[in-house]
View (cartoon, helix red, strand yellow):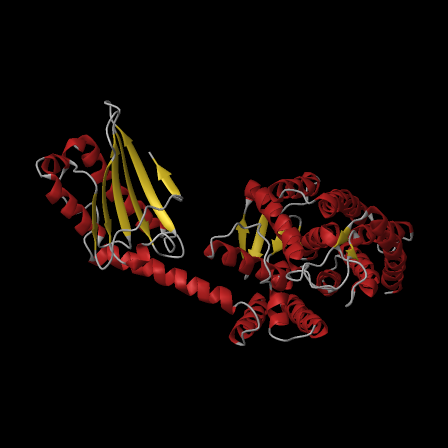
Length: 505
């Protein structure tokens, strides 16, 4: 136990002193985080690059552990070297991002590149064990290992939005992983966990509210990477075999926050890398919790999930850990602490999907019960158009417009609007298909609707098929289409949406 205490103390002191030096350097270089009154609520500009101090302290702690033979051996030295290299790449990328704001997709590419040395040294999983059942992965384990590590990097990065939060979560998680590794006889992993814990504890002295320095991406990504590796190595049953419950349960909080962010952004039509102020800690702050109360609550949640994983390891019962973790999350959602907003979005999406399925099962589908192209050709335009409109009623279409243009001729338009939500201000989606004829005529048929989100996949596909069926007919028989005609129910026709989200030819 003395070697663990000594290792922790070396990393703690190194981080405590290095943080002061890095903070002053960041201020001189102008690498500071300015408040914006929305997501960034601190009062004055705060230095970034705190992760550089954490990384350097981590390196010094690992060197001290190796020199002092504190549980060190070939396994420790190799794993420590791999972590120093990979974490160094991540830290450098994060430091540049703190300074110049890298493109999110480029940063993701750099994250993938940074974990490749870990896989290259053979630290990847070819078999996992869940609830006592082994699952052979083979070479599929390589991309899954990369995905796990990149996921851990971004999970801590997303969670780093409040003074001391990512540091505290990293400290508690590292401590629990160290206990688990020590109980399973992985002393070399326990040493690394202790070194990371000491590095974060020293930094946390300067990072607690009100923080004088932030981790920045250089720190949150380093913490995520090291925790990802510790999660794999601490739960190893034997070479390349991972007990999946331990890392998954220990990382419950940051991973759950990441899942919520992806669900929220997908269901609200935003890019996955867009920033928002709706993370777990933001929800708690908006509910009236102070920063210290939020830190204590989330720290206790991490401690609880870590204790559940530890108990599962001791009693060899994976079910116990999963029940504890899922119960805590369900309780948090039920108490509206966090996750309830995303749950409501998911319910609405499911309801919308079921409604679309019901429309396809109950109402006549767009491609069933309609005359063939040969029979359509025998119908006058008015009858074909009426048949088209009747088929559209089974879809959530607010407006449809047919436009034909030929060389030297005025455009011909035929429109139909169903209800007030079809106006331009509320139309949120549109599907347009364009058909070109040999004589130079161009036929465009466009359908639009008022839903907040785009139509679900099945509706979008079926509606496109309906538009194609009639669009081809009207394009082939364009001479039958009369001039400007607008038909509506309950209102005049609205102008076409000039910004279609779907375009097909």
